[in-house]
Length: 452
Image (cartoon, rainbow, N blue to C red; front, side, top):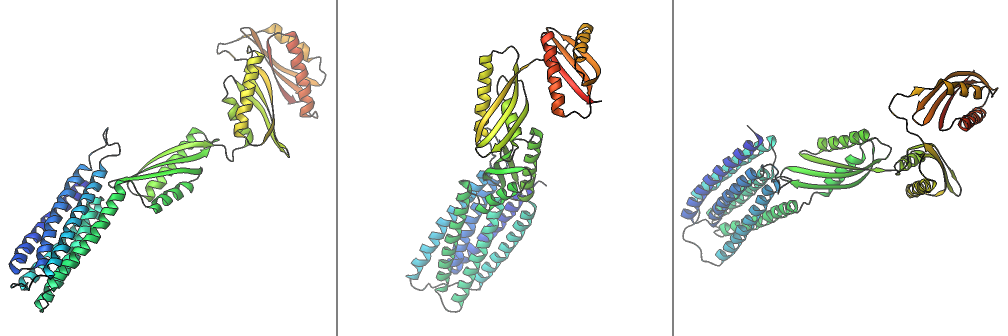
């Protein structure tokens, strides 16, 4: 049996029990002239109307989402509860009016007796059975329709108990006891119906308990990887709770990492709050991200930039000083390259606070074609002769020279004295590269140094 079948079957049994109570109370109430009993019987027939409304709305609320109801039809169930509350309020005010009117009338000739007590006792028994059926159904499923009908059943028990006490007072000689019971019954129903209307009205206007919002926010903030919870939006639709959350994640996170954090947030909320439908939006934030990573990421995203390297930054008393090497197309004009440099500087200053100065070293970038290049033996010999002019190069390893269309890609392995510093080796390499480029036009040189 589906959860929807459990819900509707419980409401059908509740409806049958209400109708039987109405028949007993109304007939005996009329015959014994008990306003409290007749009032309670009218309340019972209204209960049956309310329960039928709940049955219909519970069925409609299970319809799947469509083009006009993207969150489903759960609100129909809440609307049924709202209408039911209004019906109860109207009839409760009628009870109050009728009971006050009877205080001014002479003592009736016929007063409630033993049959009225039996009718009220039967009704109490039937209400207890309703409560049992509805509670058992609520353990297996959820839905405001069942909760409303259970809430209504407890109201009925209180109302019938008041009516029974009034009848007992009449039998003891206090004939106004029946009218007082009807008056108390009407006031009680009015107060409870107002509470029901208020609760359903809040749900129809998408109001949710403040503690639920706080609970969701705490769950999100305590999920590893979340930098900040930007917003939490929650709404109910029947028994379903729809939650939309915007979180800030470190801009250093990969898309895969961001997706994993979002999935953890969703799982944690669903584990804590039943029937949750969670949507996560994530935004990058540069907070607590290393400055060099921020600079590299921002500069790489600027149009015209081919590659970024040698990014350095240091903080001084008068601000942050930044230096980076930017590679652009080798055929780009100096003016265009300068515009690229200006844009990089502008974007960095927007994201990095307290920047004093930015130094951008522009370099030509040459793309390597995917086709297999051709080795050039003549160039290899020329390069080897150039390197031999530097005595601190102890050994020349493999020299690979590849002719790539109109450029020469030259890769060299060299061994140096092991006691040389990196700075000294760098100066030698720079000299070799410069001399090779002077003799070989369109050369791209890469030298790999090793200790001898």
